[in-house]
Image (cartoon, rainbow, N blue to C red; front, side):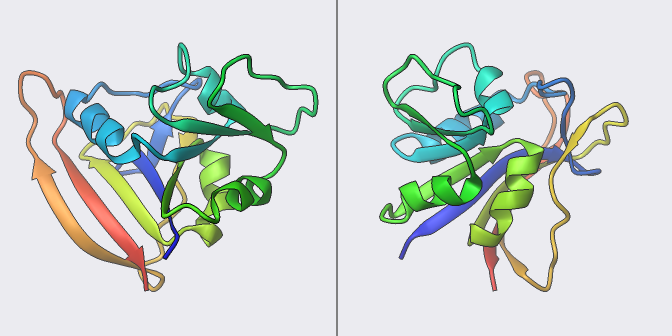
Length: 165
């Protein structure tokens, strides 16, 4: 079966970030993101792609942009002009990920059958990008793992995995 998972870290208010950047630094969440997405295709919007200093290693990047002239000078990257086109490029893959941003999550949810979320136990009133509301009649929580704040992590957070019912 083909699994398309959305992966995100968000605040309790569903905040994802501000000015194309994260509002927190959680090293263990970065490790989890890397472990889950390595070796797979990742779908993202142009602004999310441009927030990286360079493409993420060991992943094939599918960048959604309305700009027909947008070019990426890296191998392991391609551009498409709709989420539907991106989904078409992963339909034969066992597992692929939608990694953001907010608009791409909104458009991609209907194609998704799994959510890998990190819920940060804080709110971020200055955020300008948000994860879609999770409809519990569609999504079933299957695993959760709590991580308390510590010397490296300013916030408590919980890893949540949902599957489409």
